[in-house]
Amino acid sequence: MSPAPGPGPGWLLFSLGLGLVSGSKCPNSCQCQAQEVVCTGAQLKEYPPNIPLDTRRLYLDHNHITFLPAMNLGLLSDLVYLACQHNLISGVMDYTFIGVFKLIYLDLSSNNLTLVSPHSFSMLSSLVQLNLSNNPHLLSLNKFTFANTSSLRLLDLRDTGLQTLDHAAFQNLPTLQTLYLSGNPWKCNCSFLDFTIYLIVSHLDHPDGQNATCVEPAELAGWPITQVGNPLRYMCITHLDGRDYLFLLLVGFCIFSAGTVAAWLTGMCAVVYQSARRKSSEAEEEDEHGQRVVVSRRIFQSRVDAGQDGFPQLM
Image (tube, rainbow, N blue to C red; front, top):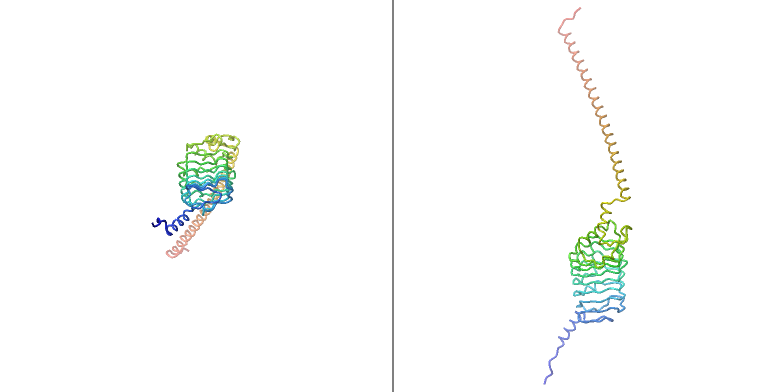
């Protein structure tokens, strides 16, 4: 009997090539199974190499990773879940997530974030949950940070260094449902007014709303930012404090001074104009008077000459 036919050399080469393309290797200290790579607590100091390219769920949490390389991460075009919490990542750049456009869940909590570039998440139109909590050195977010994350439903900004937020950053989030804001040193000044009004009219769910409170000014310290909209509106729009009165006084003085100077200049111009006009009128009158005298003399002289020619001279 002839041996049962088996896979030939061509089939083996094809399988090997397919394995290389799909990135079938698994990083050291990680576990890979069913399009899931788990590197939790693996003491990694950098992004691991050899992650299978068909990975859909990647766990890099509880390591010492300081940077997410866009080139390596961008190869995971099927990635939908990325957990990077409890690392040492200090910044997220515009191009970091440019290749993972299918990403649905992203956790960057408990890192050392100090910078989130304005267009860091601009390619993540499918993102549903974003966690940036517990980044105490994250002091600000640009108004374009969430510009294209139109599918976002949950945003966690707890325990960061954020003191204020631009309401324009949330205008392109029509599906946002849940927003966490507690543990931040919110400065509830007049620049924060538009955001507080947004919180009122958007009807978002704030599970930690009572713990998201103002630290400044003193009269609003301890107030939940979800309830500070009306008092802040009164303070910023209808109420005037000492500085406002001083400002109005300075503005009034400037207007009064400008009006006085303008009136003086107008009066001076009117006086100069009237003086010039009067001199011009006097000059015209003098010219007319001189012309009349000359004409009268010419008439008198012509009459004298006519009398000498037409009548005999009396002795």
